[in-house]
Length: 159
Image (tube, rainbow, N blue to C red; front, side, top):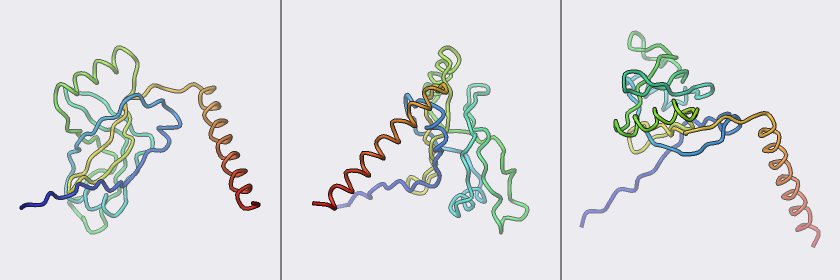
């Protein structure tokens, strides 16, 4: 009997700032069109998702502002580090997301970049912007859980 290969997702980069600046409503998986030297640079960890976002052009979706460092041994085959890269999704998904972004004021933000088998995938979040008071509330809640965990840990050592 043929055994199925287990699909593992190795996370390369995460956009932690997106969770701080936005409420993530939904998550989608998309492929990304890359060149060979870009994939090698990604394997070496030379990618940054900070301040990147997704845009639409002629029915296609692109990620803008994602920095992939030039591959050291890539010489003439290296591409521009901040070039727009095409995201690969089904057309009906792209049209649905484009409609939501235009009408309801959502933003599409890359949340993480990972390997699914040998393919590079992007997790794209349908996000709504946070106001300053929302960020303060989230920070206060995070601090409260830290304090509770710290006190519980101290208490367990005493007994």
